[in-house]
Image 1 (cartoon, one colour):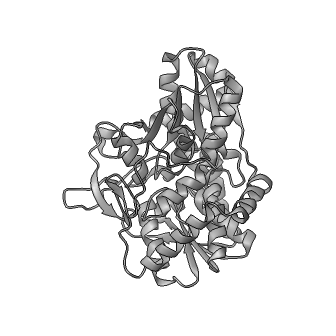
Image 2 (cartoon, one colour; image 1 turned 135 degrees about the horizontal axis):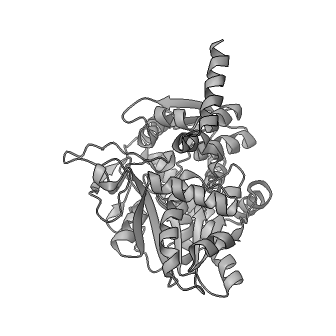
Image 3 (tube, helix red, strand yellow; image 1 turned 90 degrees about the vertical axis):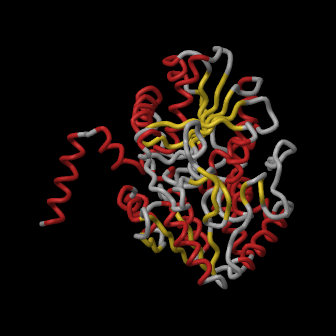
Length: 420
């Protein structure tokens, strides 16, 4: 596995902090669980039996390594640098999320846990968790904001068919941050038999480091693949950023290299409108705070109350961001941008028409910035975009965005059928 925390990075220190960010701000009730998880995780890093199981299931169950695909028609259409897609949407369950879930559930079984809980926004982490819980015969509860349940109904359907209990969270904004709060409460109340499979590189230590480490397989593969194809490193690597798991995964393969790393956040309806979920991009007024067990930049008001967020992509609609990415932004190692909902839909349509590939709305944020910048780079340069999820889960949102009349008729006919 890639050595994620190389000499460039400061941390984590003994308190789980990356510079000014991170830590573990949890109740005394949760601390024993956190410490046990950290101990198991540290042991797993160098445990041959752990890696033998991971490698076998990554290859034969998940389908790794995922391909690195040269997007020839997009490259020709845009001009400039060669565009490569790291196709983690081809993993079993359709996203990068299963990389982390697999590792955490193996650790949970080693700790004797019989029940798994998780939070999810876009639903891909929920599907991956429900899938692995079914494979290993574990009880599973998924917390999902009520808003996200509605817009990601296909994923809710599959989670339930896989045997998971999906709990719609009606608190707050009824989105990802509220689902995470509900999962943390459940974990504190059921610590003896339950493990919380946190899905992103956020939360209390060791979760940010552990999730990033388990996702670093993406970057390890991508670096090997691009150098084999091009004989040199890419000029830039792009990834969307919600909590930060897929970005940390692919960026980790290039931390020690002279490669520009670009994270793309949810610009929603525009930064100036306040209806967005961007925390690290230029011009955003996110501020330091402590919530959900860690310290990072949050979208919050002067009293420390979390503000409402918005994104066309449910998986990016999060009020905080990975403490590792916050540290990397402040130290200048990662550059951040934002993409609006309208830009995302346009990039999605272009990719579909040029390549016959349907990226998830989350991943399409990274495509927006890459498409803006590729034409200005030399033709002998290359860029890599992390396609972290596939777009079939977004059928309702995308059909609405395109205002498709045939889709509207189909929904109306279905509604009429059920009313009858």
